Amino acid sequence: MKCQVCGVADASVHVKEVQNEQVTELHLCQKCAREKGYHSMLDQSKQALASQFVWMAENLFPEADAEMGQIQCAECGLKYSDLVQTGRLGCPLCYVHLEPQLKQIVRRVHGAVRHIGKAPGREGEVFEHRRHIQKLHEELARAIEREEYERAAAIRDELRSLDRHAGEEESEEA
Image (cartoon, rainbow, N blue to C red; front, side, top):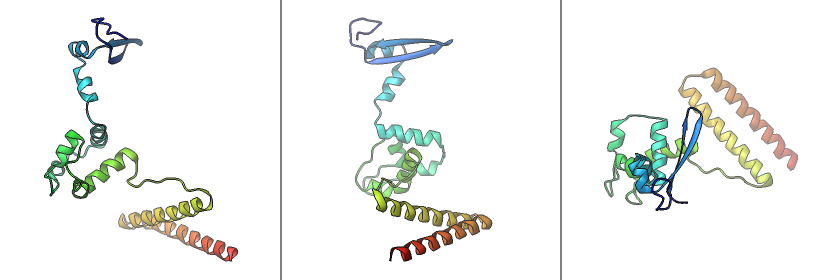
């Protein structure tokens, strides 16, 4: 498809605009897109995917902590603020030195920092059961930390019930 403005170059920027419930589509080459003021979109599309994830994490859940931007890798000197700008790490040890910040970003984007896949059959059920118990233990610790003792007691009772149920299943299998 050719650019709708110059009609010479191939259109590589496709823009949909909605005004007064009217949708208009523009198919432009990069030069015409810049001339029309779409240069910020072009610049943004050239960012690394990781940088876009960092941007999402920072802007969806802003922390505005200036100290965090000064944290840096002891090996290559890459600062967290540089990671946010470029979306790239400087060396393999950046994963170690910036681990808390990286985990925070991954948790915000994916909802967890640990990959949770699926396991087939009975093994999957056992795994899910263990994971549920682990989650309850974590919730129990948080409830105690927050001094939510009624919630902690309810979680404790649920854990005891699960332990009894697991004991009954083991005796039935034997």
